[in-house]
Figure (cartoon, rainbow, N blue to C red):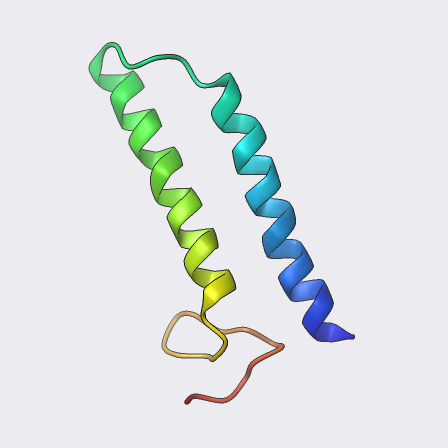
Length: 68
């Protein structure tokens, strides 16, 4: 049961980031480029967290507490 809530939370974050991505402006000035890059990084972090099914270092998942 806990496994679903952690993965579900990550999927919710992934959906929220997708919705935010649609609203982001096209590349323009430096601050816009930084915003776009931060958005890409956030998506990659969530995608990586979903893919990793172990706990290691700062990445700890309650549903997968053991290291492989």
